[in-house]
Amino acid sequence: MKKYLLYSLLSFSFWSVSAQKNDIAPQDLNGMRAIGSPANPKVPMSWDRYHDYAQITQFCKDLVKAYPNLVKMESIGKSYEKRDIWVLTISDFKTGKIEHKPGFYIDGGIHANELQGVEVSMYTAWYLAESFQSVTFINTLLKEKVFYIAVTISPDSRENFIHTPNNANTSRSGMRAFDNDGDGLVNEDKLDDLDGDGTIVMMRRKSKTGRWKVDPKYPSRMYQVRGDEKGEYEMLGYEGIDNDNDGLVNEDNTGTYDPNRDWAWNWQPNYVQNGALFYPGTLPETRAVKDFIVNHPNIAGAQSYHNYGGMFLRGPGAAEDDPLFTRQDIEVYDNIGKLGEKMIPGYNYFVLHKDLYTVYGGEIDFLCLTRGIFTFSNELMTSYKLFNQKNTGSRWDNDEFNEFDKYLLFGDGYVEWKTFNHPQFGEIEIGGAKKNYIRNHPGFMLQEDAHRNMAFTLYHAYQTPKLEIVEVKTEKLSGDLVAVTATIMNTRIIPTHSTHDVKNKIERPNYISLKGSTVVAGMTVQNEDLQLFTEQKYRPEQIEVPNIVGMGSVKVRWIVKGNPSNATIEVSSAKGGLIAEKVSEKLSK
View 1: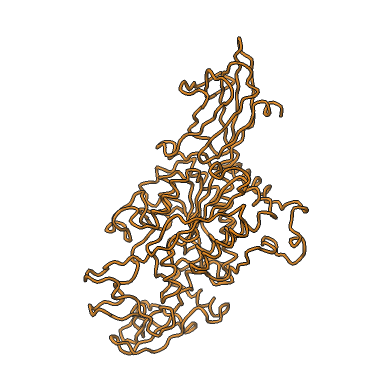
View 2 (view 1 turned 120 degrees about the vertical axis):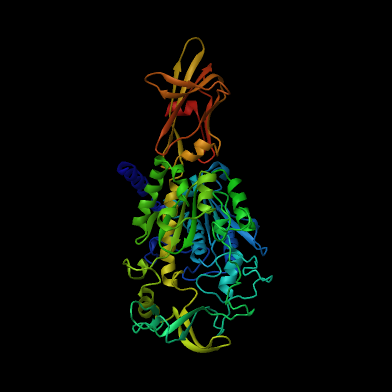
């Protein structure tokens, strides 16, 4: 494993070297450019803020206009409220057909209140396009690979979160209305912005029997008393009114389902998996993404961005699927995930069901177990980033966010408590964290974490299969027969097929063909020294190879009539791309 990781690091470092001086734009050569950032981008962007749907759409259009040979934009479907779901396809379109390149899929914002996932997706697209001419690693990456970036896959509820009053946890889903309390009405008891400030905070009321007190160090913070300590307040929940007089507050809010429980692997109904709907693919947004993934079999790696917690998550979502992740595939995940822990201090590489919680019908399992795609889901933002140290309590049971707000945000993270005359509760006080605080990054921290997470994702994409014909030999046999032997190597750590893929025949095998010669026999070579071969009698000119493992090779042999020097060896792999080379050219090297 150590040798495996060392090779990956060395190869990654080699391609990270900057372009030659004469290839760099003039503005990159002066001392004003900060290393790692585009010097004079064609699409100027501020990455210390969040963007709404109109701005996201304009950004996509601007990037296409600025880089037509690198970026294409398409709508893969409509959301529930009929917004386009945009996907940016990014590659060097001059270096072969994109369907013949290994693909990498990225999305953000399936949970719409997790704003920064969309920003990291956008930043990745922007950085790839803006850095193509000046950074050799990016240049090479876009020649070899193609990126499919679905910048926001829950656009409706993102608009709702940004432009209407919400708290940090709403709206997590889409905008489809449901009768959550069974009274025959929908959305009749939503959150109420009592003071009209655009954010939903907490309600508290003084009470002799309350179990909450004000933190004397940070007046914005309430803490729960323990033992025989007496409290001063009772907490009444988020701002709201019992609008339908059923004795409940905020019980029929918009979007209470979970689009990340709507995927077709180990899907379970709502009474097992809270947030699931009627069947996998109930939602138009998840159906659109699913169809796109299925129609792009070249996708070999994938990344989904969420928040919160600072994690690189791999599947499975449920313990019963652990046996489907073999040692060989886990070694690939370990290589990428453990490097990620170095790349982003404070983030941890975890297994979803083991280290976080069980998820049935999640996107991560759909990608890796129905499509054989090596997938990570990153939980962005962690309290570690506040003071670059690990806290010992949960995010709700420590004062780090309050301390950070005091010394670095100067009080901008919280609404100060103020009195309000509530129609049902009487005199109360409202205050607490603003909707964009705690889960979402403060502006000045956003670009750094976007870049670090992008770098992790680009390393993952770099390790998708890269096939090379490393050796071709010919041998004269009896009569006019000639043996042609070719060795094909995968020079990256991700195999062309996961073990689960091979076992279940999810994707077609790799085809290694000899074209332009009369083939009388074709075979795979198990051991050339011991003359161990397995003949493929059907279509011997096109040898089927189930998998080419990471940093591994396969050897094939054809028996042909006549001189094969003008023949061409072609390797076609759904996830590994298409390469071809003439026998004569390979022999002359």
